[in-house]
Length: 91
Figure (cartoon, rainbow, N blue to C red):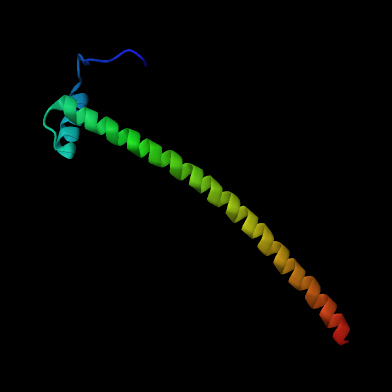
């Protein structure tokens, strides 16, 4: 991507393409199609970065959740064993 892009041209836009661009123009508040599309592209890149960060965080949380569930299972099992030992000592 070392080559500088000076302009772009999109030919043969469909009606759906035109509708989408009009929606983007309304959403961004930019009423020049190229500026609206660039704003949309910046937003997309921002959201993509956020999504990647959130996906990594979700993976970390799922791993932590797995560890905590495993530890809680071990704690419950230890309490059961302790209860059995204590109940045998009471008799």
